[in-house]
Image (tube, rainbow, N blue to C red; front, side, top):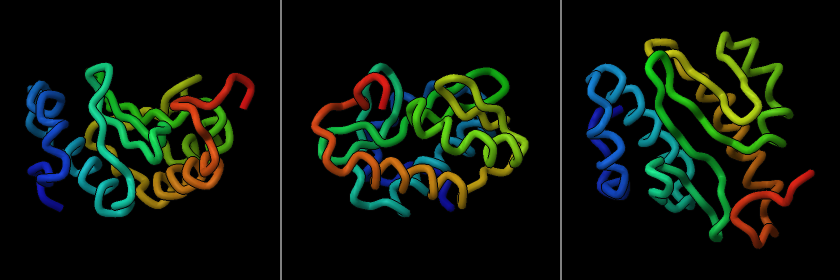
Length: 134
């Protein structure tokens, strides 16, 4: 996978260029490119200073960074559904985030399942976020 953002993801450049550690930046760019390649129907969107992907104007997955890890945001319903598998792959789950330590392999199979879960369960959603309790 390229360590450069795909042209379609140029909107994410302010985010990726702000990641000062080049190894961390490469890992995050690889994940962003993977999402775009694996789910070409998703639209890249840069909001709240974070890259995210949407479909029909509803949130599907987002990303943020911290010092020891990067975060995958999927919404609470999806995180609750996949928490056992995320934990089993030695990643951390918080109330709202899947945390992947820099340098740790990304579980792309699980990420694909989680994104597909959001696509399947949000097909008819007309709001950006899931309604509370969903």
